[in-house]
Image (tube, rainbow, N blue to C red; front, side, top):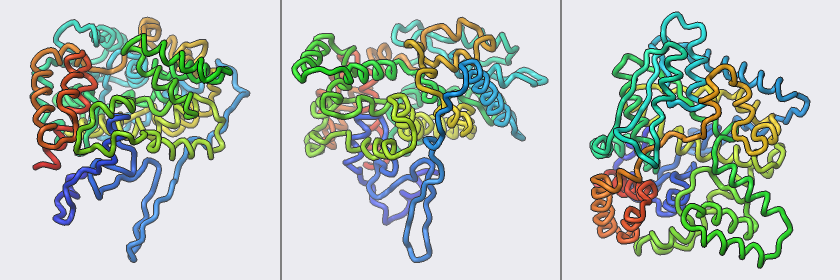
Length: 466
């Protein structure tokens, strides 16, 4: 559903829910039921809203994956086999359609597994689609050769689109229109273009790889969070922990997430809040302008606390990995990753289907002991074991890259120039951001994080100011 429909109601004011700016800047999206629009709420995932004739409204939860129980009796081999068979069936049933179906193929483990399983039992070639970029960028190396490897393996009818900085600028107004509510993820850009490519080649439904990283621990950030959580359990004096913070400070920008998580541990919070983190407390104070001054000292933890309490009250084993999975399944995945793929794909009338989020696979993942999902620092250990022999070893064993955009380089050119111009004008008009500090992010090579602010500015211009 789209918020635009509600904005047609003359009684609906077009104002920002200022409080929502905190989670947006901290986590790149806004947790349900809140939205960036004052007076508009969204239904949280796995909930039903009942509206009665007398006007009373109630919300009921109908599903919770934490009700799955850990099965310690299975061997690794049995677990891997069960993961593969469950995923194979999840892909199979999502092929059922009365319109043409294809696969988005980036060349990573998840999409490659989708493509290979999809091709099983097919009489003709599967249609696969990938995005690459118009140069060699250090911030995002080209993965198209890996996608081609898998496409060749399954005999796919493979299609590729090459994007450059002009495509970002051309698409920006349309992107904001499709988002409805700002989604601070530049991957909206390639998601739209690969969806458009699929649609232009006759595909109406596409299978995508979202969800695998959350279920099977595929993020490098998770690995570092687990390490810091382990440090935090070692008996240390407050002075020693503060010394660690100073040491991380001296390591510079690359260690910023580690410092933030260590600070949380010292304060008694869980070190992991969500897999999508943008600006910490100090940075938000630096970036928020005079119009939103009361928000500068607000703690983003208040937006994570309800989720943490749900987890604590659940029957699930209270492991760090279970908490990380639960947090991202309830926040980052529905409000950022699935929101972006759904809205961008439907912008060209294409339906995205997500085999990795089949409820049987989600429940199975929660039943797998943490030590089997990630083993000796090996991310996606059990998923890799499950698909080894199905997809090439070079796909399984290469370092995870993730679906991204080379914004660092693009922001040094015309994209960055336009972003600076827009951020300065927006900050002057509204006072929400400190314009100089926002633009300083671009000068410091922080184009990806500057994008989050630029996205909000363009959203505000389209949906609030106009």
